[in-house]
Structures are given as structure tokens and as C-alpha cells.
Amino acid sequence: MKYSVGRAGQKLIGQTVDTNSAFFARYCFSLGIQLKRIEVIADEEEEIIEAVRRMSKNYDFVVTSGGIGPTHDDITYSSIARAFNLPLKLHEAAFERMKKLTKPHALTPDFSWDTPSPALTARLRMVELPFDASLPAESQAIFVSDDMWVPIAIVNGNVHILPGVPRLFERLLEHLRPSLLPRLVNPEGKGIYRYLFSTPLPESAVAPYLTDLATRTAARGVKVGSYPRWQKKRNTVTLVGTDKEFLDSLVAEVEENVQGKKVSAEDELDSDTEEKSLTMRYIFPPHLIIWDAIGLAVVILDLEGFSDI
Image 1 (cartoon, helix red, strand yellow):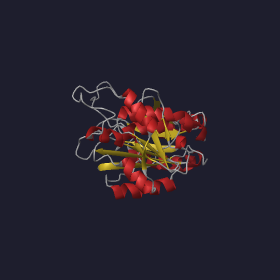
Image 2 (spheres, helix red, strand yellow):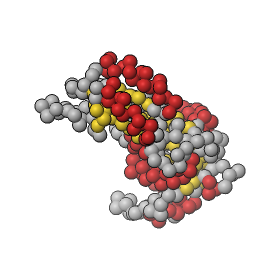
Image 3 (cartoon, helix red, strand yellow):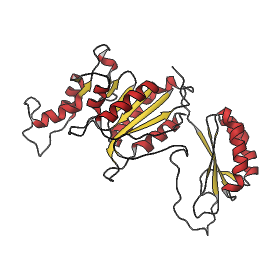
Image 4 (cartoon, helix red, strand yellow):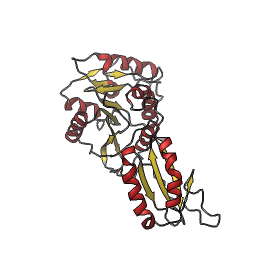
């Protein structure tokens, strides 16, 4: 099964910090799903339309993040609706939840849910969802908690539209976890195992062995990585895979060939006299490509841990 996620926001100018991608990478890792690629699309309607059509066609599970607020530049719902030739329709259940759960604002005491106003129109933008009359209404939007009014809108059967606010994005994803587990190759969702090895050797010295190891273990789903640690005396070699028993069987061999030791943290074997400077932490795999731009950031994921059902 293949997976994609998108994000809207103004990251290029530093207005927002994208934490959703990092959270999503960890989320996939915890489920045994390997994240492979991120693609960024500008916040332009035509580009969003092209991207969401392409990804809905090529991927089995698509997630978007952001662009569903009340302002003029929140165009995710309208762009995705247009992508699939669908109208926007007021989702009555979401609207009722919004009215029930939204607290009055001290600066807008005259606001009324029953009286037309620009403020009401703006709020309605957040509950006007793409609607396909040929599909059951309950399959097009789901609520994950009684204390949240924002739904997960589902379009074309596989495009899931989530908010960009990290707290909401994370909660909604976590509530999606039970529905994803049955579709995993490993339905227990045990996740991926990462083994770290600390080595005093430079990358050039271990490269031939690691190349051979990667070739020999690729069929077993093992990813072999090498990470230099700037201004440190020891570098890091990693093994990543889902078969813990097989990874365990490689430990002694790797330790011998890199003249190192399996560790629980990169800095475990750093000497006390070595300068304690910040080292780069690889949140994403080395083959992950991340681009940032103002607008919808479409993240394409190839999830090896998913079955094709």
C-alpha cells in the first residue's frame, strides 16, 4: 500500500514551523511503515488539483494537512472538491458540533450563529466539505472524539483532509491508528527497529563493507545507513528493519567489521573530554527528500509495511 500526506502553510518565510512532517515520520515508524519521499506543491489551486488527483490515483491512502481554516487563503477543501468535480456542502453534523463546542469570544459579543454575517460566513468555510452524492454520507467524514468538532473529510475514497494545527493533526492521526492496523502487513503494528552502532572508523573505511551488507540484506527489508558526526570522534552506522530476530543475528558481524559496538544512543561512547556539541539527529531516513515552499506541501510516502488491500 502507498501513502501520501500534504501540508499547507507559510514555511518558506519562517512564519510557521513544520512539525507535522516530523510527527508523521515517527508515526509511520511506530507502525512499521517506511517513509520514502516528500514532495512540496505550491499553495495554488491548479497545482493542488494536479497533485491531489495524481496522488489519489497512485497512492492508496492520502493525508493532507492544513488549509482548512476560515480565511481567504484556506483553499484545501475547495481545491480538492474541484479536483474531483464535487460541490462543497455544509456538513450539518460538523456545524452542530462547531456551535456546541466553540466558546464565545470576548471581542465578538454580537456574533450569532443564527444571523448572517461575514464572521458566520468565515466559520462556515470550515464545515463546507467536498460531497459526493453517489457515496454514503457517513463514509465521507468521520469524527474521532466527542470534544472535537473538526471532522476528517474523506474524498475519492482515499484522500483524508486534516487540519494543520499540530495538536489537532496529531490527535486525529492517532485516532486513525486503529483503522490502519488491519491494513498493515504486520497487523500488530509493532513498528520498525533501528539498531545503532558506534564506530571510530571514517565512512570511507566502512563503505565497502556496508555496501556489501546492504546488498546481502536488502531482500530481508534491512536498510543500512552511515552517518558522520561532525566534530566527533565516532560515527554512526544504522540497521533498520522489521525483523528483530534477523537484525539481532547481524549485530556481532557489524560490530566486528566496523570495529565498533552496538549502542542505545549516538553519543553513548563519546569520551568525557570530547567537546559536547550538538550533533545532527536524523529524524528522517537519509533517502527522504524534503522541500519547503509557501503553500501546500504534499508529502509522498511509499509504505513498504502496507499490504495491497
